[in-house]
Image (cartoon, rainbow, N blue to C red):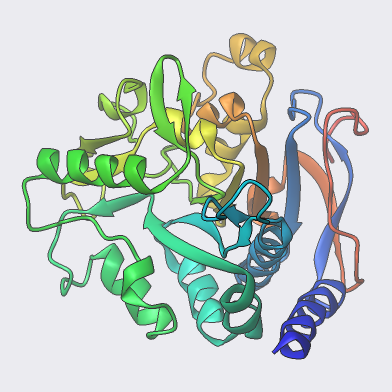
Length: 333
């Protein structure tokens, strides 16, 4: 068993050194301002984006799983603490790219070996559409189909979509606070996710924090309801985590692809001064990531990054872009 665990960890490392083409970045546009706790990766295609995101999540989870965890079950003053599985908490996102990631979870040795021996991975939803689980637009249906039974039901924590949305949000928040570590954000206790996956819409929304609604400004709750505007498809009520929950996560992983999201991405990476100067630029909801205390990993495709960063794709290993404050600040090509 220990050999299988070690082998699984080695497979993760080998895959990290031989994964698909990535893009290198030689500089960023003058308006770009990336906080020191952010790291950016630009990938050529959506498939490369899904693969790189999977590698990143595996690497983070492996690192967290290696850290010691003990149960408070020792007897006697001199008794040694009893080792226990480390409980890790991952918030899932919807979308076609995350679906590919979850399908990878279902077949990788990493989750079958490393986590079985070292950690218990609990899966949560960052937001859900309030439709029946069998509905084509259901987040839960997509996730359970992609995972294909590879995770036991007791570690997949679902929202009660049969209940009224406000009641479901309150129940889900209570479950998070009961089962997860918590921290204080602005005087409110919020759960701390080890990894929180997010997407981004062309309008700059993330999770189900849609512009033009009250949800993005909610800071006194863990979960809230949100009914998006008429242009959002499908237009159904949602339950979503709030900005303070996102800000408290140890690792936030944002995954986005498509040229239609370029304006929202520019609003995310632009400095306050640039947004003040360019009133016509979108100031997206996703900009709340600037309040994150943990690590923020931005994984986007080349179509989104163009105009913000000078990048060129190479079929070369280990040239992941690590663009942080202090990178070449020349004009974008």
